[in-house]
Image 1: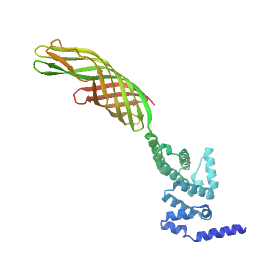
Image 2 (image 1 turned 180 degrees about the vertical axis):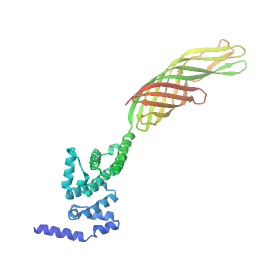
Image 3 (image 1 turned 90 degrees about the horizontal axis):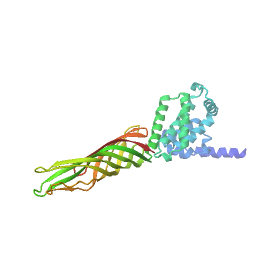
Length: 344
């Protein structure tokens, strides 16, 4: 008994050395309130109003986790019976009438709910998000919904949190690859030179065929970076008229490959995308020389670089793909249309 009286006297004396909570709160000295009174020694002796002022001070200082601990302490100290009854009814899926309970318990639940929302919204990476915080937030959402308390604000806060969680998940890159088949048209140019006059005639061989391949890269909910490649199989023709009566015509099989990096932006909820690519094309195709020895065909490098704009329109894992491009330093072009399937 003597020890209890001594403890009470020491505690009361310690409290007396500090300004009252209400005066500190009125002066917005939130840090001093928290540093002075946020301890078991003082909390046990404070009134509910004083505890709520400490709680509000913690919120002002954005110390949401400590505030939740204090609010749970207030719930157990002043609303334990109501709290247990509400949880029991929710567990047994019984009807709950919020008018049967004090308004202050609803407000305490709301404050807990808000604090968990702030905690989650501060997280900037999905691996930093604690499952328990999300689970507690969902539990409080269900509880407030059952009590029909501030329904509009509850749903607005829930939408913000769910949107943020989805954003964190969308930020994460993961490996993805696909297989595709395209019908393509690509061009290959050369020059027909006339020795006697020094005149050059441009030759453009337009090939059409198929490009069989796929891509591999990384993707999140916003961007897709990949290396795209395929084998070219097709054929093409070229014709030109010399002077005076030389006609040059060729129709040759073509094979080669197309490969290069690409980057795209996800533009819809279905993960459809629009992007750019910087591929190179290698074409194995040998033009024969004209019958007239005054003419000579001079071929350029079989490797060409180009820039393309492409789109992928997703239908689940399947997609349609279009691609259009132009070679660097020349007027030749490339286009393709096809389909593919993505694997995550």
